[in-house]
Image (cartoon, rainbow, N blue to C red; front, side):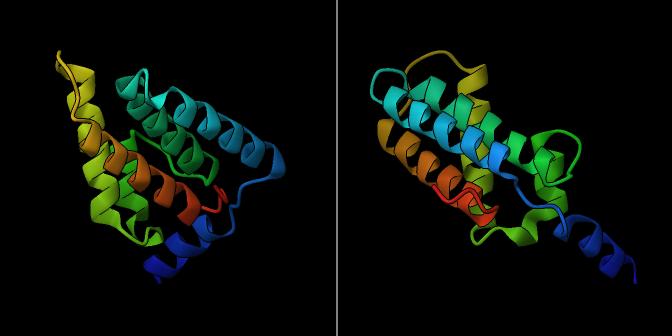
Length: 119
């Protein structure tokens, strides 16, 4: 019963047109900035996923949101991996491996699409 109440509480939330437009336009900016600023692109993509989860009714840090809604994602491990790279980027100096960054962006995109973003 608790699982049912949990699922119904969050399953009814969907992204409205305003939120979809925001996510889609922001995603374009992230992709456009990737070549020149891969670190910023990773940070922004993580923030965008946090925004989308918030609009779906999840609360807390992004890590807490991922724990609460993991079943919504087609590749939860990939989402966690992308978020961990974001944490590394946020706290470490130096360059980022562009291959890892591209992979993380692909995971963020997949996660946003799992939430209905249509990217």
